[in-house]
Amino acid sequence: GNLQPAGEALKQAHIEPVELAAKEGLALINGTDGMLGMLILAIHDLTALVRTADVSAAMSVEALLGTDRVFMPELQALRPHPGQALSAANMTKVLRESGIMASHRDPESCTRVQDAYSLRCAPQVAGAARDTIAHAATVAGWELASAVDNPAVLADGRVESNGNFHGAPIAYVLDFLAVVAADLASMSERRTDRFLDVARNHGLPAFLAHDPGVDSGHMIAQYTQAAIVSELKRLAVPASVDSIPSSAMQEDHVSMGWSAARKLRRSVDGLTRVLAVEVLTAARALDLRAPLEPAPATAAVVKALRETVPAPGPDRFLAPEIESAVRLVAEGGVVAAAESVTGPLN
Image (tube, rainbow, N blue to C red; front, side):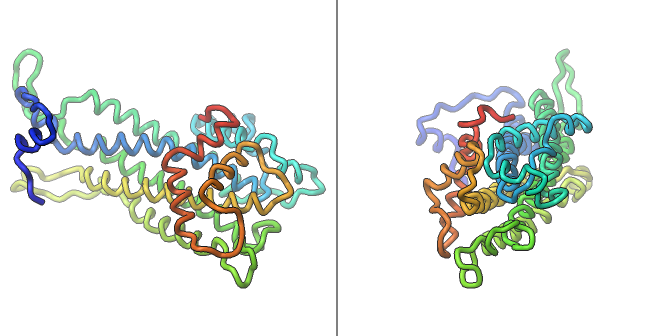
C-alpha cells in the first residue's frame, strides 16, 4: 500500500511525535519485535482457549454419558505433569453435581467399560497444551528482557557486532503453539463427531436431528469443524525449519518467525471456531438428555448460549448460530458462565 508521511499522520491523530534516541528506531521495527508481539497475543488467547477446552470437553463427557472418575486427583498424581492436573481439576469442578452423570453411576446402568480417548484423555492433551503455553510464556519473558539490535552498545561504551537479532527462539515456540492449537481442535472435533453417530452417542438421535432421516441436525456443523481441523494440521507444519538466504548470502540462515507468527494467528482463530462448534453441539445434546439434569456449571453454559441460540428443533440455518457460539467463546463467555457456578477455574 501507500504510506503517509509519519509527521502528517501523527498531526492528523493529534499525537506528539516521540524523539527517538540512538538505536531506538531499530528496536521498534526489528523483525523479532513483531514476532514477539504476535507470540504474546497468541499466548494470551490460547491461555483462555485451553480453559474453554476444559469446559467444552466436560460438556461432551457429560452429554455422552461418560465418567468423571478418570479425572480424580489420585490418577493425575501418577503422571505429575502440572497442566494435566489443572485441566482434570477444571473438568471435575465443571461436572460436579451432574444429574446426568448420577443417572449411570450404578454399575448396572453403566454403558461401557471405558470412555473413548477423546473423552478420557482430555486432561492429558489439554494439560500438555497448557505446559507448552507455559514454556512459550517463559521464552516470551526472556525475550521481553532482551536487547536484539545489532551492533550492540555495551555498558562500557564498546560497540560490538552480535547475533541476538536471530528469531529462532521465538519462531520455535510459535511453531510449537500451532501444534497445540491443531491437536486441541482435533480432539474437540472427535468428541463432536461422536454425538452424531447413533452407534456411539448412547441413545441420542442421529446427528442430533429433530427428525432423523429428514433433518440433518448438526451434520454440517461437524463438516465445518472437520474442514478447519484439516487446515490446522497443515498450519502446524513448522515454518522455523525453513530458511531462504538473502543479502548476498550474508543473511544465509533466517528463522522465518514471521511466517510462523502469521500462521499461528490463523490457527488460534480456527481453534476458537472448532471449540465453539463443540459447545454448540454438546449444549444441544445436554438439552436432548432431558428430563435428566446437567451439572449446574454446564447448565449455566447452555443458558448463556441460549440467549442467542434457540433450543433444539427442526433444521434451521446454522451459520448464525455458529457465529454466536464463536463470539461466546472468543469473548470468554463459556468460561465465565461455568465460573459463575464453580468459581475461578485454573
